[in-house]
Length: 186
Image 1 (cartoon, one colour):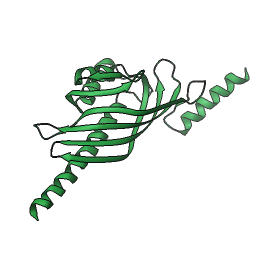
Image 2 (cartoon, helix red, strand yellow):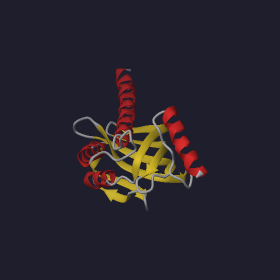
Image 3 (cartoon, helix red, strand yellow):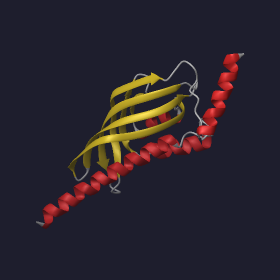
Image 4 (spheres, one colour):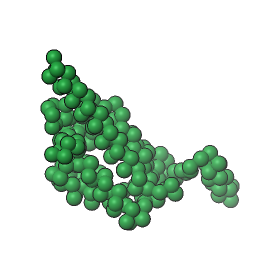
């Protein structure tokens, strides 16, 4: 009875650790941008990209496909992709997870990603939805890390032809609308 209970507790602890890892990964992905919708300065960007890449094993595989990081092998290559972010702003929301613990050191999961972002080159708004299939490994330090991330489905849509008016609050949106209205009436 105790062995069964220990297995169940270990499984639940693994699931909780993987959820926390995914939350940390998403938070770091979002820390690469300022409140003014720009990339962080290079030293900050490099530090955050390094921390985000540390969510992966040394030999991890990233399968983003054409235009979304391509296929990368190794933490260093993944870190370089994170440094070259195509966004000037992004918010990542991972939901709907299904986590299966294979054994004490391996797990698999699928996640649904919902992301709002601004393209770095144009400022245009993008809504991104994806399903990721992931594998995890627990290292000798006891920490879970992503060993394989594959974007099985990736869908992007621009929100409009004009740059998306992002603001931190309603007053900011009103100010942007006022400027846009004045430009349209000229």
